[in-house]
Image (cartoon, rainbow, N blue to C red):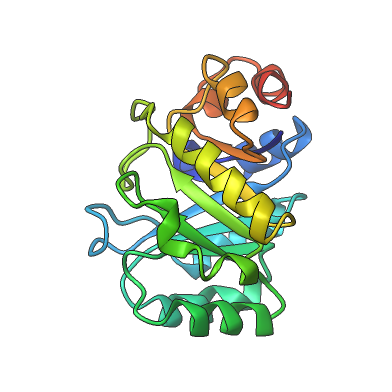
Length: 213
């Protein structure tokens, strides 16, 4: 299991310290939540702050767009050369075109599904994706409780992925901890996003290792 701590739970008054601490503690990716205050009821960070995160991170960036006008935001963040850019299928009218655009920029494209969105909604896009991110909370805020129905949803997506595109990774974001990590692993999940569980832990290395099972 790969672990991508969410910067949303970091101390923004000590951002460089916190980014360096999770990288030194052995995380695999640095998850960056970009919210525009329209698609979700929260507003987070833009390219200036994400550029500062990229400058001190020694692990690849995993940028999760929770925005309207995805193409505009892809163009904003593409110069930072993240490993992944993910966008919500619920918002995008032309997902295949955007997938091609992200890949043409040398970035791995990913699609996000909100808790209520079925995996079947992306069946015809799966062959072109590097990752699918399943939200296990309603997007917008950190520290929420895990939605249990993501477990069978991940298992269903895993079966679909294995049939269509075995190289596509499955990521889960929201309420992840050592209490549900084994269930996620058994459902076929490859990457977990953990915010408060990692950043609020007294020992970030122990927290990350408890998820890398």
